[in-house]
Image (cartoon, rainbow over the protein chains, first blue to last red):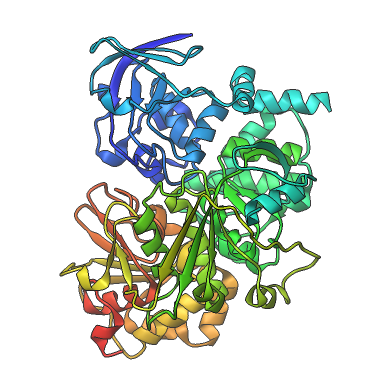
Length: 164
Length: 416
């Protein structure tokens, strides 16, 4: 599956309080959460997002709280995937569980704000069309790939439970 | 093997496990709160199983937005309460509860050698008791509630060894802020942190809970302490069953040694817990609010230290001091010991147990341009309110002294 969209570039240690401030944690609706994406940095970010756009961070993206509302807000805002040099472990796990593609890419730093990107989820190839560069994401470990292939953790667990 | 490896090997019936290995592990306790439970319950329903795997091992604690701050948060608490009743799960109601990570160990629900997962990142607090405890999201919790197991990647272990006697007014909070300052907010990403050394063996359980609590602020999966005489003493009146104890033998991916004998109180500047500075290098930082509480520092020892400083003194006219005992038991004990009286006489607002202001929920949200010093665990941008407010993290001693001074300072400036 190929994704195409513009990059919204962020720095290191983008935390979940910035991604979705706690005052919005009284809903679980992805669309509603998505309207407040990145509001911790000030208002107006969602106005710049077009469906299919991508978030690009550097190190430790998604650090902080375990709130699954963070990847839900990302998904709910129409973001197609998140690319970063490294992810905080709970955010990474949550994203995989809810079916938000997250790609670990050591060269994510080279991608700049507004770059047009094309991501091939099957091969892990990230093409920066604006700059004519090609990167490769770190492949998922086989165990995690099973969850991704099942379509998320709920599906994966449902199959496992029914096999018991 | 390390503490984490021995525990995970034992609970999965293996002779040994290695870092990086993926395991399906049984869980001894699964918990969620009023913010994360509704989402977990929604996902649980999608699984198509009627019942949780073991109602005695599934715990719900309303603590984030309680007593309900508005209608949507009241609805969230209701969803959780009704699910807990339906399932016969362990549930603590407002007025009989408190902040989950202080409450559960105190009620004897967490024991050494257990695997505990919670839909709250500070679940790692229970590492102080030698339990492998880690935070996860709501979907992970939903699946574990249904199946009684979860998947884990065995973490590598970074060992922190502390030597020397802690100076006056320096404690667990300072040690952990200093350590996060040294290694950074992703310095222990995916790792298990092990805390040891003679300083740790001298440290109270309350101090150890504070340190384990903030392991996640370094990116860690768990923050573990070996069980010793102090742990056993804590467990004696609480533990209702047998438990397993392990000792660490390594190997470690890294060993960090630290002499604490001249460590100063630490203050983490906005907007990262790793921006720690010694108190002497803070400079002139005026504050509008001071907060003493949270799953990090809302325990008896924290309140005793703060009350000792505030007794007979007045909170600075410009400052609002908010004190939040972490549980009902602590609240009652603090009342009996006269600590609450000391806080009120000093001009502080004393709240019923809640996470409240720590995450900018309620009970002390910051306006634009305001600055707070807090005993809480995170100082991310906007954490306590407006994106244009600031949070400084420190110990109960420094926060209490700062509330009196009207700026960040230590008890030493008050002649203590």
